[in-house]
Length: 169
Image 1 (cartoon, rainbow, N blue to C red):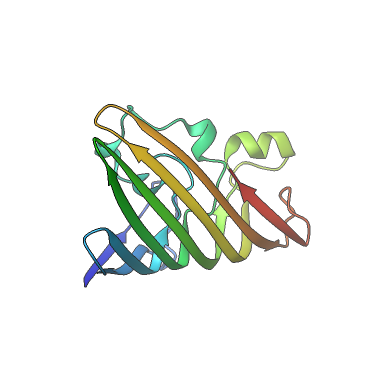
Image 2 (cartoon, one colour):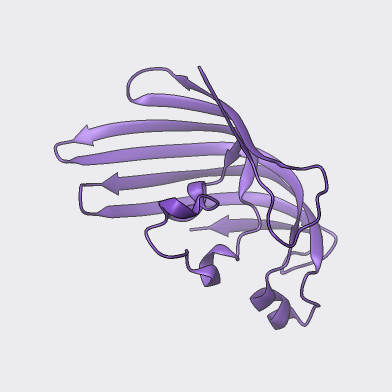
């Protein structure tokens, strides 16, 4: 059993007591199956699981046009990692389930398109989060497909009415 935790303070944000960004327990069930539970990163895009670890990027910085679109970066839930080796390729299956209540600052491009002030903060509650990522890797290539859905409630209505379903492919 391993414990992983990450504290995070972003520049320009005020300290509000929520420094613990990630905190989960991992249990290696076998050499190819790992179970994680707690506050885990939601692996929505290619580098979402290490978005705040700048030296690990394959670029100078990830494309902000994509990565600022998802305010839901962590969930309180469980994730299973199942790895299968196929010759020089490996396939990783990542089903995940959870929920999350949080707040997020609307990114400038989205704020502009909605005619709301930059820095506008929204509160939201995401429940019934479920999804699956499948990642195929070799030494020189990575192919990834993912699907996540959640029931989201927000008082702000950022493309989200009182209650809405959000899906990410």
